[in-house]
Length: 333
Image (cartoon, rainbow, N blue to C red):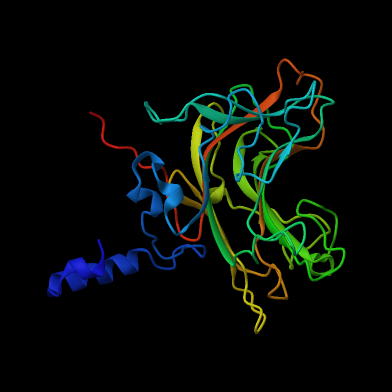
């Protein structure tokens, strides 16, 4: 309920105060409540790509089923697609399910890797000039929301995996690193930053949970920071189930330099993980310019064969400048 609809009665004022107290500083990561999002206006996401706040949208239905032939004007790169003997990035027939209902659509994106295959698969979308300053895609963004649906295959195992990345490069700096490059104690010296959303296995049980792996300015080692999620922040992952995931990344201020960057993860419409007080950059030229919808493994054991690979599925990708929210399904007839 918005404040403008509450009215001016004393009872309504008390209600607003009470709600504000209830959502107060009980948890250090607690953000202000957000609206339902852009998707609430577009049942089944129909027409959502035309919303002025939406940068990009793809439900993979325009793709040729069984291929990795990127439709013109959509993604900017594909890994291990129609290469003979690999075909690790494919759009296949399938549907997303939410509860006991199937969402509309005919295709989903499948990313598959196996023992001795190339260790990554996926798609890349440029949100600004990423390869060169002459790319014609603009300077990128200070804040981005990305929503997509993801499912780990029924046979998915808890292997070490890096997931979908958001990041950017400072193209005014010669030799700036590509998003995904690793092993540096100082990202500013390399002119880049990135953060990946990935599944983390519990070392005792193997149970998977969501987490970030971030190359920001204040990380403590040459490797990425997993933000050390607390027990209450470890959102458990059930294989074989579709999840609505939404990420928010807001870069820090640079004039003056402040630690006010933010990363958030929403799972099925609920906040699962938030980190603020982050610094990703020192200069304004470094902005969010790339999104990689991918998987990356540090080698898979022999049980994952070409016939039975490690598979992850994605669908209903939306990238926007404001909160998106999960796909809105019309009421059942």
